[in-house]
Image (cartoon, rainbow, N blue to C red):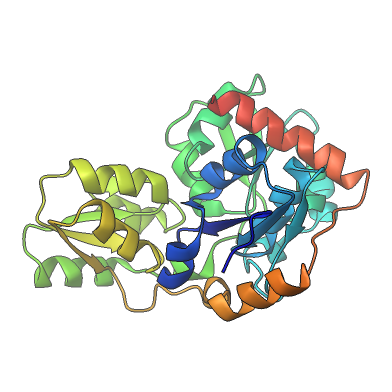
Length: 294
């Protein structure tokens, strides 16, 4: 399916068959690093939602980045604008702005540094400022706030991932009742109440590492169901069950093999990020990558 001049990057939440066809599969931090450091082809095809393709284009200005389905967009990222961030900056002029990668390029461009769910705590703790405006996920902000001495203020106060935030304490407890002795792991985009029920909280890459090292025979997975096939591949002796049947991101599932094949054939749609937004957003992303190490 792929051409020699194309590299296919896929997020852990896209369809299993898309992950199987990809050159690289990972979480947002892993894909950001891969896009910047390990891709040599002229074209990058990003199987994920819109901000992931934007991030690849920002970090690789000499590459041609293709997003097979422009309508595949992050609902959380859509809830915040650059103007919202600037207004919050005016209210807290001494605060640093940490932008979750689940944001538009325009939001990243008016932020000081980016983060992912894998490195949010590390990024917040790296800052000299004592007050941090964390955009746009209040649940990840709460997770970071609990692990730092800094004041972490979520912007907007209601921002969240609708898929992860919908997971409930009752669903976690019901899953535990069905699978006695199972380990529960959840994503930090879930609510603090759900996180309090978990045995492990982590990004998708963190969950993959935990799946390999845990001694539990059954693991209840509190994140988008697209991760489960990968967990089954890396830890084939264990059973992985979704914490809820509703943990499905419809936008991630928009990316199909057929759309990828069509995008490769026509070398588009191409993702472009205008200057000076791209250069300012790149600074925030590069600062994140420097904090996170190689």
